[in-house]
Amino acid sequence: MNYTFEFGWLLEYYPAIVKGVLITLQLIAVGGVLGIALGIFCAWVRALGPTWLRPPVALYVELIRNTPFLIQLFFIFFGLPSLGLQLTELTAANIAMVVNLGAYSCEIIRAGIQATPKGQFEAGASLAMSRFETFRHVVLVPSLQRIWPALSSQVVIVMLGSSVVSQIAAEDLTFAANYIQSRTFRAFEAYMVSTVIYLGLAILLRQILLVIGGFVFPRRSAR
Image (cartoon, rainbow, N blue to C red; front, side, top):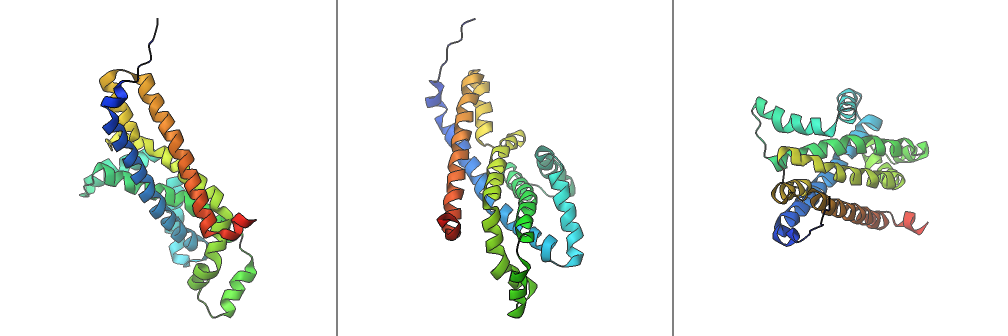
């Protein structure tokens, strides 16, 4: 059986591909910023925060890290409406990505905090700083500096994992590929194009995070 590769459909479905790429970028932008912010908060709670707040945060982290992202997405999109909370596909996808990245980044950032020399905490205390002020001004930046490569890799992994949001009809890049395949029956070409785009996005995102790390942590770049 001879198979002829055909990419002429790209012109006809170009808007769908562009829309899918833009939604994927929006998902990782929102999920990356808010997810890391949530991870920083949870890492502070688990390492230095109030004792009473540590068990619920630990439960959240373990629950998210030990369940599939797709199940988390389904729970948010299909489960929460049972409690009266209606969400659009894109909103549910954004929440799921923030919650997922928050749990994973929490443990990565906590590792950086725990590697902080005790002398830095003592220095903050000698300046009459509270535990939170010491964390914010003395501990956080060096901790992020240590774990930035690992955190960057996790952000890229979450971006690639966003492909499952098409299962709730969020119109990301994978949704566009599925749509094109169902209309053209060109599965190989449709998914090959989406694969190449995901590869390009992953490389681009990694480079952007590298630049951000070099800007925020110039001393690390200098070394």
